[in-house]
Image (cartoon, rainbow, N blue to C red; front, side, top):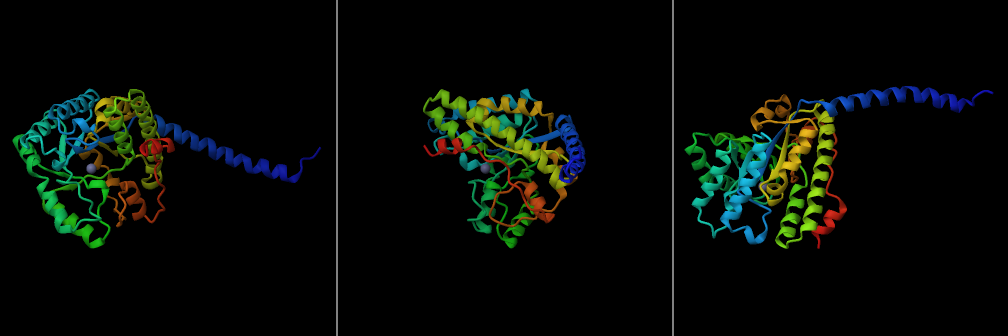
Length: 325
Ligand SMILES: [Zn+2]
């Protein structure tokens, strides 16, 4: 019995395909077990965002959330950087209490940077007003750092909007450099804030079963996002460079950050400072994006290299539906 020609052709084609498939799965396995994965954890909107409504103007509640968040970071030896939005502090709390909250972060060995005073959107704000807001955001922050002989070094763009016009983008970058700032990029962008807002609402309503479901969905989403960016970093820069994760100082993380950090440890991550992550040469690549979107720096580098970008996973549909309740 002779094989029809098409079967032989299929067999011959299958051999190199199988060889390629087994080689690429070996590569995937190798990178999945790599112990040298590094991530810098950065936490925006300090002293707090995504807090149940009834606790937003309660200093003791804010201090308790900060304490829980810092305890989880400390327990997992995470040298995190927090980014302060002084205007997030409720007017009903005396302004000097902000210094107490910032002091908690610094005493726990964390770094603090500026995230503007009122979280303006650079796409909708003049460069002049945006610069004023940066300076206004330095008040209590500079004092808290100065009391501990630490410089004010880092700046994080609200919404990761870095300028939708080349002239504005360049103007703000020059202004930041002149004031001694380094821009804190983000590579692992994600939908954590969506889960955090849902969680805060469920906590406010005392819906414990729903809170548990949101936490599970949050952790599953973050795992998916990490898998995506681990592969994407290889596509864009050729290897898994140290990542910079964006999170927020919210009730969700205060209550459950330890679970996320354990998941990352399980993926082989070591937690490093922002400075250490940024030593990797990938961070010297050109940000090739001028536009309205708040993109991961991996997308910005991809665009700088003339590549097409591939977007990270969003939250599941049912999470979006919960949001619309
Ligand atoms: Zn923010």
